[in-house]
Image 1: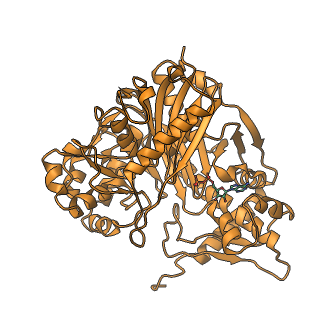
Image 2 (image 1 turned 90 degrees about the vertical axis):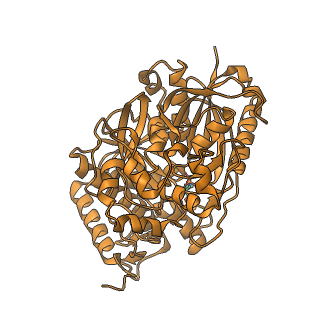
Image 3 (image 1 turned 120 degrees about the vertical axis):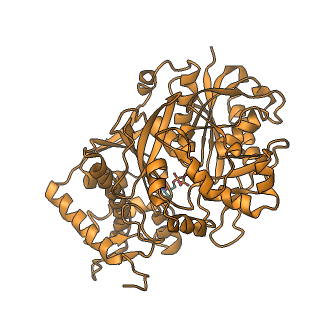
Amino acid sequence: MAKYVLALDQGTTSSRAILFDRFGGIHGNAQMEFKQYYPESGWVEHDPMEILRSQKLAVTAAMEQRGIDPMDIAAIGITNQRETTIIWDKHTGIPVYNAIVWQCRRTADICERLIADGLLAHVRERTGLLIDAYFSATKIKWILDNVPGARARAERGDLLFGTVDTWLTWWLTGGKVHATDYSNASRTMLFDIDRLCWDERLLKALDIPACILPEVVPSSGVLGYVANGISGLEALAGIPISGIAGDQQAALFGQACFSSGKAKNTYGTGCFLVMNMGKRSVRSKNGLLTTIAWGLSEGGVDYALEGSIFNGGSVIKWLRDGLGLIKSAPEVNILAESVPNSGGVIFVPAFTGLGAPYWDMYARGAMFGITRATTSAHIARAVLDSIAFQVTDLLRAMEDDTGSALTELRVDGGASVSNVLMQIQADMLGVNINRPQVVETTALGAAYMAGLAVGFWSSIEDIEVNRRVERIFTPTISDEQRSADYALWQRAVGRSGRWISTTD
Ligand code: ADP
């Protein structure tokens, strides 16, 4: 009996590999950073070969940590930075251009044209998304339009498109499998999330030949095997690749949010709040995205609502690097805990505008309520408050869209280790905050999907018992206090709105 499942967690700044046992315990965890390329202002690229190399090195390092025998690996699961776009030659495996990363804004003008052509309603209806450079569709068009000869080669059937999961799978299977899963397909802005097929009108509008698109398969299911002689991974030949999910969806799975209404928030550089919607593919009235959470079987998908915050943990880094108020991120907690509250100070961290539910790209950061009594401790506290207030905005929007109230929020990500932030969050939301022991939820989710497909875990229930709670934070303030605090935040957001706009 194999003892482990190997998760490949291919992120925006690093590739990681983690080995999990049957109980979700970690037996090797390695991380390899790779280079970010910024060829022009607002452009972000990765070298797809470097992604592949770093991922292989992470696997080797993770296995060497405990001398893991490849025979003991039951399956491989892949989770990945979403939307990032790669196009390569199907005969040689050589990319025609660097990977265009999800953060890259180079296709903003293509998006504006799509909006001017009246495609917004169609995109929302079919894909559950908004028209934005964030998603893969316009990045594919950019490569086909700008790389000499690429369009003709694509039309001849010589090129393949993939997000990073597809790229890794293609290479690991020796070019045999060109596939992605439902969750990643739903982030391309080309996939009809209800009919579960590529949308012809969008392909036509963007001039993308259908022959370059991957097959869309369940998130859990054997889709191929590591081929013989994959350099650096020779010992893994024959191991099934049986799970794929985009990073946020994998984290939702890793947090065991299996039923409708369960939600998790990741407190990283930004914050990602995702709520399981079960079989309901609702569209948001509040600027949230509808996305496929996962498809555990052919044609059987679950949906999620997703909201993101551009500046989450990054505001703590700003305290450190911008203001010099703290020397390291953990110090923010000591400073913030030295006062009972922010002393009336409200900070709006609209460094790059505000995302959902405001969608105001002209808003800028502001601090309100400063008096002669304000200290650096109050500012530190207001900064932590601002993260929790933004998450509260997203959750209120989700509750409005779904018509039901959340009972508990599951948390992970770098800033979720902050006890003071988690207590503030419980107070603001008026619900319990549930922090698990294993915070590697993204990799764990991919491992679970892969392991379920090969019988390493027999059922969702088998997985659910693995989730061990590290700590629950319960609300301590009154409803009146909560409403008063939130009203003040909304007032502050209102005043920082459209700050750099020339029209008002
Ligand atoms: P990402 O995956 O987006 O790079 P992480 O999940 O690694 O982000 O989280 C990094 C963030 O966590 C940083 O922005 C940092 O400010 C915050 N952070 C790290 N350690 C702590 C801590 N002890 N207390 C509060 N915040 C922290």
